[in-house]
Image 1 (cartoon, rainbow, N blue to C red):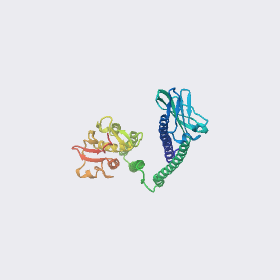
Image 2 (image 1 turned 30 degrees about the vertical axis):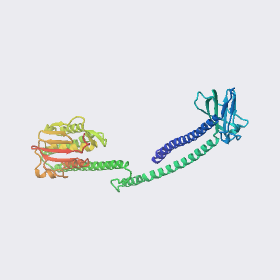
Image 3 (image 1 turned 135 degrees about the vertical axis):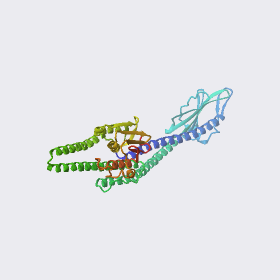
Image 4 (image 1 turned 120 degrees about the vertical axis):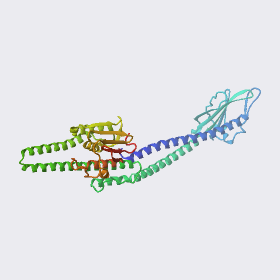
Length: 436
């Protein structure tokens, strides 16, 4: 049963059946008890009326007058009977005709109530009680046929069951109609997914239940992250291809070089540059590792991995990296995005640093600074523009800081650059709850 509509309908049917069965049983019992109490009250009154007609002579012989009772006690099989037991003598009402019923034996003066078969296929409710009059002990049992009551109760139960079944059917149909109309927007999502697959749209639009909106929001966020990751990958491959193509062109030009010493020096220089480019891409892929989008990532683990890669890439500078980030600090986001963000910033700091790169965490702000020459004040506003390079003689594509700016914007983080005298300082301030 994977259908949401079927699950809801099944749950509603089971719940309503339990409730309606409980209502049916409780209402039947309540009505039966109410009618039975009324009958017992009437039988108690008749018992007291009969008690008024009981007399004993001097010898203790019983004399009984039924003039205080209703005429039904005189009509044969009327369904209204009494029995009076005094010692071994039992007197029955005329309505029993030639039949009788068992007289209960109450204890003390308490009322005893029981049910038993009666004459002519009747079913009797019996009210019995011990009395004392003229120093004589006796028992009066009043009985009433409750067959009509039981028949009426059965008719009520049947009618109630039929009404409950109709009520259940109506509720199930109403609930199913509500569910179908509520889930209609999901059909729109299905159509939007088909359009998304065909490339007609880049994001899903959804107007429906609030419970479904977070799923669509997260799906759109994932689509944005994948799109940006693909875009960055294409740009990275393009930059690598362009850099390799430039160096291959230089190698081609060296084929006409007559000075062998100069030729060897140029080839060695180009080989080192190509190796560094390949090492940079290999290191980036290696430190990213397993991708788990939307997970909390250990910030110190990311920074230490990137610092290790930069130490290897810039080993000729013998840089000193200082990382002041507490253990247990985590960032909520995509592991590759965070490696790309901090990787570009730490790589930029390593490229320009003279001796030291300093990384720290203050609240929700990560600060990365170096002791290099810094950036001319007039260029700080342009530093994240694609292709911008403060020094054309320094290797690079001019895309690293622009990519970092894009990733920070995706996570709602603010990226700020400032001169640190000496060097450049970069501050990444994340939204509350993202970095804890």
